[in-house]
Image (cartoon, rainbow, N blue to C red; front, side, top):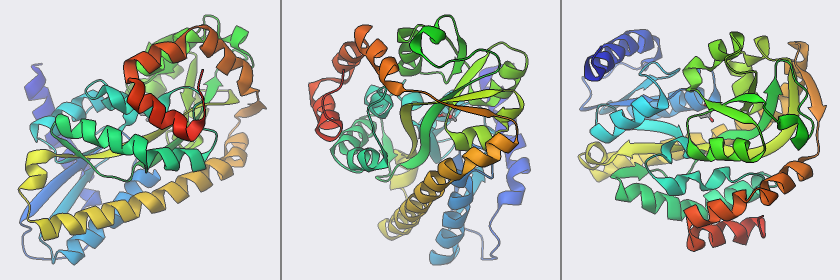
Length: 337
Ligand code: X2X
């Protein structure tokens, strides 16, 4: 089917499926109906907290601004939604920094392997000079990035068969990664055989052994039930990733400033609450996931990091990110590589 037709169909189907996610308040017809889409399940904190933001925005604008939420890849893959937000077919899109880096390369910066020790480092960088740099790069592509990133989490490695306790165990490991150059580069540098698969197709790819492994935050593994198709979890903490909340520039700027202020305030408020949710969940989910049958292993990240350094990963990505952005990151993390 022609791409544009397929997209139209998907948008139609999504609108029906998402009707349960429409706001509860009754006002006169809204002046601005805005679409927000993403790949995460509807019970992930990204969507539950955005649901709250949507309700507050509707109320505080007296019904003028109504946001419709399309979760769970209803409108297609991340790549599809990235084109939709660029064309204005949707107004808002929440995307992994690394995935949207296919358009804005600087947005890969948060995914540099083993860069962040903890959340303190993450938010210092992303709410500070690293984030400012990336937001400025988004603006050059006519995307308005909100200044508070949402949390996806620190990523762990899972497998359905193989033990992955050391870099040597990575050799030939068929691991699913999201479609993005940094993810592929990181796992190739570790000696694995990464395969890029959109999130919506990941469960079945693991089920049919198109890939044997996954790397994801605990919340992603939990809400998408990946424990049904994976057996072991290795706490590699190899990367932190979050979601940029992006707006189509034309659609954003056509709204009067006071309405934009209400949206910004409420989306950022929900982002901060969502960060707390995800951090808590990623701590609490270990026992839930164990009960579901996932077996946990603590591994030492240091040898993985050394392997990355030896393979030239840091040198390569410093070159790609440029000295300015790299220095902003190292100002928080200390020297990398
Ligand atoms: O695709 C994934 O693995 C996800 C949802 O965790 C991202 O980080 C984009």
